[in-house]
Length: 301
Image (cartoon, rainbow, N blue to C red):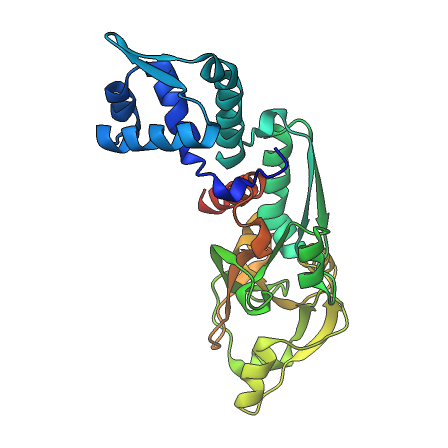
């Protein structure tokens, strides 16, 4: 046994041994393995050399195992079962699994997909816990690699480069007005648009400009942004007590009972392409695949 080296053994021979032992016939074993009879006969010769035993003796009724074959057959069958389990894809049953999922997303994503995602996961997987986190200012890729975060949802332009991602949905922007003299569907001139006060959403609350301001600057104009807040829910609440214009995604406008007018501006409005990103090591993980499929099913609904 000291001189045994598994590299010198073709493990396919054990598969042939198992078939020969169960079938008691070279012909039937060959059929079971989808091989030719000469091939299986050759494998039997190699098995005899490996174990230094005849293993199977020919009779008028086929082949019968030797005591050595009877002794190793249960262990070979167990070994092949273990190898089969090792190579089989991991199964994941959310109804009986206990796990924690951590997802990064903005206030916007919380109200458009992550709220439903959390409810769906908790309803389908009673042993699950869901943590929805704000996106950190830096270190997202490292946290994904370390397993501190499972998924990051964001606009495609903000996705971490070189990570796998899945498109979820597109969302357009509308301009909402809490000014009493602007009716729903009313056109607004660029001059009036720039004169009125605007609210703006920035996750940090520290910025007063975005893509709309870049577009205005390109034509030599500037709007009057007086309020910057970290989330759309806060912005819509503040608009109830102060007249403002604000650009919000269509899904946000539909998610809240705000009562504000939608006005038409002369600007070409941007859009969002929401994607989910993850670390490559999790691409084939069954639990992670189920989480991604859950997100996609919600986005498609």
